[in-house]
Structures are given as C-alpha cells and as structure tokens.
Image (cartoon, rainbow, N blue to C red; front, top):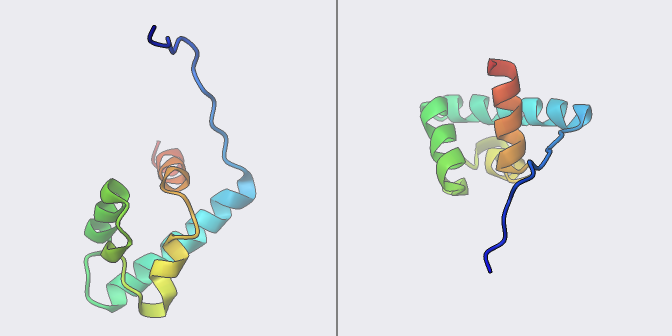
Length: 82
C-alpha cells in the first residue's frame, strides 16, 4: 500500500549557515567573473544539475561550493529574493 504524505515537513537553516552560504556564493561569483564566465548562468547550471564542473576551480571556488548543500543555497536565495 502506497504511503500517504499528508504532513508538511519543516526545514530551517541556522543563521550561521546563512552567512556561510552568502560568503561562499560571493567568492564563487567573483571567481567565475574573474575567469570570464557569466556567474549567473554557471550557478544556475550548477543548481539545476548538481554538477560541480559548472563552477571554476579558480580560487578554490569548486571546493567551496561543494561545502554546502544546494538546498541551503536555494533557501538563502529565496529568503533574500522574497
């Protein structure tokens, strides 16, 4: 018998995680821009696919982005946009 999902699951990001995400995104954005990439396009590609190859290794940007989960990035982006 299929399981019913009637309850909403709650997700909460801690404040220090928000600052970590923000600083990593800023560093990754700068590295992409420095290397001549369109940072927004590259970050969207990464967010959709989860493929770190969208992020340059310049200034350890790829290592940095891999330190945080995409759901954390998405939450910070939505929180700051909305």
